[in-house]
Image 1 (spheres, one colour):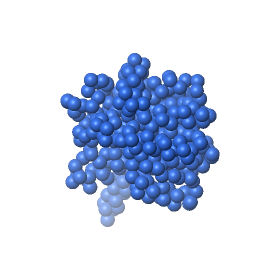
Image 2 (cartoon, helix red, strand yellow):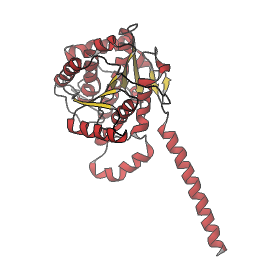
Image 3 (tube, one colour):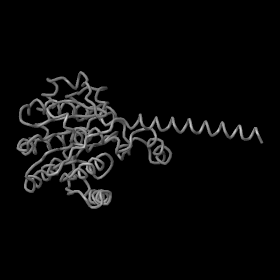
Image 4 (spheres, helix red, strand yellow):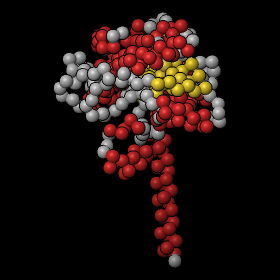
Length: 320
């Protein structure tokens, strides 16, 4: 009996140690948290891709701060369902308006902006959150490589079409969700549409580098106009964006493992929320953030010549 109690005691100790280790691991994985208590009453915020994952968490946070939130979603059905979920979560509070946009269609982006500019008098924060990852080789409605077309060109056009309203709104902000993976690639202007040598991860990383370069060039072009532009790394986040990463038969096993080992959508949303609301980042236009802290930008992400060329190429591609 004494031996049994001794074994039980050791098992309990091991369980305690493992439990504490898991808690510390999750705290490490979840990363930085936005501590800002800033309110957003009277402000208008657009969040792309807000029907799920990080975007939904960002929209919920903005609404909880009193903002008028425009949830820019590809699917109206999923967008309305997400808005209802947020309203229930907030106990009926918050102003949430769902509008349709398909970032893989320049026509859809233009239609969204036309409607938005007719109905809205201000735009305080534009959060370019929507994105695709690890897609098989395919093209957008306009014939662009899918990662580059959705992650960069769609947001490039959206931001530029709303830029005049951003300029008219005091202390406005543009927030671009990029990724730390931008550091591991460079742009090939002769193969932006991947007519040859397509690689899923390479295509994704290049689109994320384009986000950083776009933020840098936009910050340069709007200097002194009262607009702050930020790019950020949310970290590895467990959202629908990983749907192409693994075959469907593997998801029942791998999905729970990913939920344990990478950030939750709420944790992934923190840096975008921080860039959107924190008073201490005002005036830091062009900065790049990760875990709610400013981080140095890699060499390619700082290249002004490449940023200018990307802007010019993007203008031609979008007929801006």
